[in-house]
Length: 248
Image 1: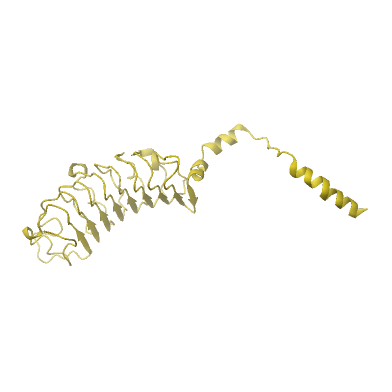
Image 2: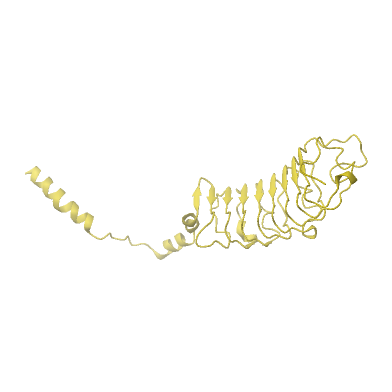
Protein backbone atom coordinates (compact mmCIF):
# COMPACT_ATOMS: atom_id res chain seq x y z
CA UNK A 1 0.00 0.00 0.00
CA UNK A 2 2.82 2.40 0.88
CA UNK A 3 4.52 1.75 -2.44
CA UNK A 4 1.26 2.46 -4.27
CA UNK A 5 0.91 5.86 -2.51
CA UNK A 6 4.48 6.79 -3.41
CA UNK A 7 3.85 5.81 -7.04
CA UNK A 8 0.72 7.97 -7.22
CA UNK A 9 2.49 10.93 -5.62
CA UNK A 10 5.49 10.81 -7.95
CA UNK A 11 3.55 10.12 -11.16
CA UNK A 12 0.51 12.36 -10.63
CA UNK A 13 0.94 14.94 -7.87
CA UNK A 14 4.49 16.17 -8.67
CA UNK A 15 3.83 16.67 -12.44
CA UNK A 16 0.63 18.58 -11.54
CA UNK A 17 2.61 20.91 -9.24
CA UNK A 18 5.30 21.51 -11.86
CA UNK A 19 2.83 22.24 -14.64
CA UNK A 20 0.53 24.47 -12.62
CA UNK A 21 1.04 28.27 -13.08
CA UNK A 22 3.22 29.89 -10.46
CA UNK A 23 1.29 31.75 -7.87
CA UNK A 24 2.54 35.29 -7.29
CA UNK A 25 2.62 36.27 -3.64
CA UNK A 26 0.50 39.23 -2.73
CA UNK A 27 2.72 42.13 -1.77
CA UNK A 28 2.12 45.74 -1.02
CA UNK A 29 2.73 48.28 -3.77
CA UNK A 30 5.23 50.09 -1.52
CA UNK A 31 7.53 47.07 -1.60
CA UNK A 32 7.76 47.15 -5.39
CA UNK A 33 8.23 50.91 -5.30
CA UNK A 34 11.29 50.38 -3.11
CA UNK A 35 12.70 47.77 -5.47
CA UNK A 36 12.26 49.93 -8.56
CA UNK A 37 14.00 52.95 -7.08
CA UNK A 38 16.78 51.14 -5.20
CA UNK A 39 20.20 50.29 -6.58
CA UNK A 40 18.83 47.10 -8.15
CA UNK A 41 18.31 48.60 -11.64
CA UNK A 42 21.95 49.78 -11.72
CA UNK A 43 23.18 46.34 -10.72
CA UNK A 44 21.08 44.79 -13.47
CA UNK A 45 22.34 47.27 -16.06
CA UNK A 46 25.93 47.03 -14.80
CA UNK A 47 27.89 44.47 -12.80
CA UNK A 48 28.11 44.97 -9.04
CA UNK A 49 30.70 42.90 -7.22
CA UNK A 50 32.04 43.40 -3.69
CA UNK A 51 31.94 47.19 -3.68
CA UNK A 52 32.91 47.52 -7.34
CA UNK A 53 30.51 48.67 -10.07
CA UNK A 54 31.38 47.96 -13.72
CA UNK A 55 29.34 49.96 -16.27
CA UNK A 56 31.52 49.66 -19.35
CA UNK A 57 30.14 50.03 -22.90
CA UNK A 58 26.59 49.78 -21.59
CA UNK A 59 23.83 49.12 -24.12
CA UNK A 60 21.50 50.96 -24.50
CA UNK A 61 23.71 54.05 -24.32
CA UNK A 62 24.55 55.25 -20.82
CA UNK A 63 24.43 59.08 -20.86
CA UNK A 64 24.38 59.82 -17.10
CA UNK A 65 26.10 58.40 -14.04
CA UNK A 66 23.76 55.69 -12.73
CA UNK A 67 22.54 55.60 -9.14
CA UNK A 68 25.23 53.74 -7.19
CA UNK A 69 24.93 51.46 -4.17
CA UNK A 70 26.04 53.33 -1.05
CA UNK A 71 28.87 50.88 -0.40
CA UNK A 72 30.49 51.52 -3.82
CA UNK A 73 34.27 51.88 -3.54
CA UNK A 74 35.28 51.46 -7.20
CA UNK A 75 33.37 52.74 -10.23
CA UNK A 76 34.36 51.84 -13.77
CA UNK A 77 32.06 53.58 -16.26
CA UNK A 78 34.35 53.63 -19.28
CA UNK A 79 33.41 54.01 -22.95
CA UNK A 80 29.87 55.24 -22.59
CA UNK A 81 28.17 58.50 -23.61
CA UNK A 82 28.07 60.38 -20.32
CA UNK A 83 28.08 64.10 -21.07
CA UNK A 84 28.01 65.80 -17.67
CA UNK A 85 28.92 65.06 -14.04
CA UNK A 86 26.57 66.66 -11.51
CA UNK A 87 27.03 67.32 -7.80
CA UNK A 88 24.34 64.79 -6.95
CA UNK A 89 25.96 61.97 -8.91
CA UNK A 90 28.38 61.10 -6.09
CA UNK A 91 26.56 62.63 -3.13
CA UNK A 92 26.68 60.55 0.08
CA UNK A 93 29.24 58.11 -1.36
CA UNK A 94 32.01 58.53 1.17
CA UNK A 95 33.31 55.01 0.42
CA UNK A 96 34.41 55.87 -3.13
CA UNK A 97 38.14 55.33 -3.66
CA UNK A 98 38.42 55.09 -7.43
CA UNK A 99 36.42 56.56 -10.33
CA UNK A 100 37.25 55.77 -13.95
CA UNK A 101 35.23 57.62 -16.61
CA UNK A 102 37.59 57.12 -19.55
CA UNK A 103 36.19 57.45 -23.06
CA UNK A 104 32.95 59.30 -22.49
CA UNK A 105 31.66 62.62 -23.86
CA UNK A 106 32.06 64.62 -20.65
CA UNK A 107 32.32 68.34 -21.38
CA UNK A 108 31.13 69.72 -18.05
CA UNK A 109 31.60 68.84 -14.38
CA UNK A 110 29.93 70.67 -11.51
CA UNK A 111 32.64 72.21 -9.34
CA UNK A 112 31.64 70.24 -6.24
CA UNK A 113 31.12 66.87 -7.91
CA UNK A 114 34.31 65.31 -6.46
CA UNK A 115 35.36 67.69 -3.70
CA UNK A 116 33.19 66.01 -1.04
CA UNK A 117 34.60 62.52 -1.55
CA UNK A 118 36.96 62.19 1.46
CA UNK A 119 38.47 58.83 0.45
CA UNK A 120 38.84 59.26 -3.31
CA UNK A 121 42.40 58.29 -4.30
CA UNK A 122 42.22 57.73 -8.07
CA UNK A 123 40.28 59.78 -10.62
CA UNK A 124 40.50 59.10 -14.35
CA UNK A 125 38.80 61.42 -16.84
CA UNK A 126 40.93 60.60 -19.89
CA UNK A 127 39.52 60.79 -23.43
CA UNK A 128 36.69 63.20 -22.78
CA UNK A 129 35.90 66.79 -23.84
CA UNK A 130 36.85 68.82 -20.78
CA UNK A 131 38.08 72.40 -21.15
CA UNK A 132 38.35 73.03 -17.41
CA UNK A 133 38.77 71.09 -14.18
CA UNK A 134 36.55 71.04 -11.10
CA UNK A 135 37.79 71.18 -7.50
CA UNK A 136 39.61 67.98 -6.58
CA UNK A 137 39.62 66.11 -3.24
CA UNK A 138 42.71 66.50 -1.05
CA UNK A 139 43.50 62.77 -0.69
CA UNK A 140 43.81 62.19 -4.42
CA UNK A 141 46.91 60.16 -5.33
CA UNK A 142 46.42 59.72 -9.08
CA UNK A 143 44.71 62.04 -11.56
CA UNK A 144 44.48 61.33 -15.28
CA UNK A 145 42.97 63.83 -17.72
CA UNK A 146 44.95 62.87 -20.83
CA UNK A 147 43.29 63.50 -24.20
CA UNK A 148 40.87 66.26 -23.32
CA UNK A 149 40.66 69.91 -24.40
CA UNK A 150 41.97 71.46 -21.20
CA UNK A 151 43.02 75.09 -21.48
CA UNK A 152 45.20 77.05 -19.06
CA UNK A 153 42.34 79.38 -18.15
CA UNK A 154 40.32 76.30 -17.18
CA UNK A 155 43.00 74.86 -14.88
CA UNK A 156 43.80 77.09 -11.95
CA UNK A 157 47.51 77.59 -11.26
CA UNK A 158 46.85 76.25 -7.74
CA UNK A 159 44.55 73.41 -8.82
CA UNK A 160 46.93 70.75 -7.45
CA UNK A 161 48.73 72.76 -4.76
CA UNK A 162 46.77 71.35 -1.81
CA UNK A 163 46.90 67.76 -3.05
CA UNK A 164 49.77 66.74 -0.77
CA UNK A 165 49.38 63.02 -1.57
CA UNK A 166 49.22 63.37 -5.36
CA UNK A 167 51.87 61.10 -6.89
CA UNK A 168 50.75 60.66 -10.51
CA UNK A 169 49.51 63.52 -12.70
CA UNK A 170 48.65 62.96 -16.35
CA UNK A 171 47.67 66.02 -18.42
CA UNK A 172 49.04 65.01 -21.82
CA UNK A 173 47.35 65.79 -25.15
CA UNK A 174 45.51 68.91 -24.08
CA UNK A 175 45.75 72.63 -24.90
CA UNK A 176 47.66 73.93 -21.87
CA UNK A 177 50.03 76.85 -22.40
CA UNK A 178 51.47 76.89 -18.86
CA UNK A 179 52.46 74.39 -16.19
CA UNK A 180 50.31 74.54 -13.04
CA UNK A 181 51.84 74.38 -9.55
CA UNK A 182 53.24 70.89 -8.98
CA UNK A 183 53.06 69.55 -5.39
CA UNK A 184 56.18 68.09 -3.77
CA UNK A 185 54.54 64.67 -3.55
CA UNK A 186 54.60 64.09 -7.32
CA UNK A 187 56.51 61.11 -8.70
CA UNK A 188 55.30 61.32 -12.31
CA UNK A 189 53.96 64.26 -14.33
CA UNK A 190 53.04 64.03 -18.02
CA UNK A 191 52.46 67.28 -19.90
CA UNK A 192 53.34 66.12 -23.42
CA UNK A 193 51.53 67.32 -26.55
CA UNK A 194 50.25 70.59 -25.15
CA UNK A 195 51.04 74.19 -26.14
CA UNK A 196 53.57 75.00 -23.43
CA UNK A 197 56.21 77.33 -24.87
CA UNK A 198 58.03 78.47 -21.75
CA UNK A 199 58.88 77.44 -18.20
CA UNK A 200 60.85 79.09 -15.40
CA UNK A 201 63.40 78.02 -12.82
CA UNK A 202 60.49 77.81 -10.38
CA UNK A 203 58.34 75.41 -12.46
CA UNK A 204 60.03 72.26 -11.15
CA UNK A 205 62.78 73.62 -8.90
CA UNK A 206 63.46 76.49 -6.52
CA UNK A 207 65.35 79.07 -8.49
CA UNK A 208 66.81 80.69 -5.37
CA UNK A 209 68.35 77.46 -4.08
CA UNK A 210 71.11 75.46 -5.76
CA UNK A 211 70.97 72.83 -3.01
CA UNK A 212 67.33 71.84 -3.45
CA UNK A 213 66.77 68.32 -4.86
CA UNK A 214 63.31 67.14 -5.80
CA UNK A 215 63.75 63.58 -4.53
CA UNK A 216 60.23 62.30 -5.25
CA UNK A 217 60.10 63.28 -8.91
CA UNK A 218 61.01 60.26 -11.03
CA UNK A 219 59.53 61.12 -14.41
CA UNK A 220 58.74 64.33 -16.29
CA UNK A 221 57.41 64.35 -19.83
CA UNK A 222 57.22 67.57 -21.87
CA UNK A 223 57.75 66.40 -25.44
CA UNK A 224 55.37 67.61 -28.14
CA UNK A 225 55.33 71.18 -26.81
CA UNK A 226 56.77 74.29 -28.55
CA UNK A 227 59.43 74.31 -25.85
CA UNK A 228 63.21 74.27 -26.30
CA UNK A 229 64.87 72.73 -23.27
CA UNK A 230 68.22 74.27 -24.21
CA UNK A 231 66.79 77.69 -23.41
CA UNK A 232 66.07 76.64 -19.82
CA UNK A 233 69.32 75.11 -18.51
CA UNK A 234 68.48 75.67 -14.84
CA UNK A 235 64.85 74.57 -14.94
CA UNK A 236 65.62 70.91 -14.26
CA UNK A 237 68.74 71.21 -12.10
CA UNK A 238 66.90 69.89 -9.04
CA UNK A 239 65.67 66.74 -10.78
CA UNK A 240 67.47 63.42 -10.61
CA UNK A 241 66.90 62.88 -14.35
CA UNK A 242 66.04 65.03 -17.38
CA UNK A 243 62.56 64.96 -18.96
CA UNK A 244 61.88 61.88 -21.05
CA UNK A 245 60.77 61.93 -24.71
CA UNK A 246 62.07 63.40 -27.96
CA UNK A 247 62.87 67.11 -28.11
CA UNK A 248 64.10 69.47 -30.81
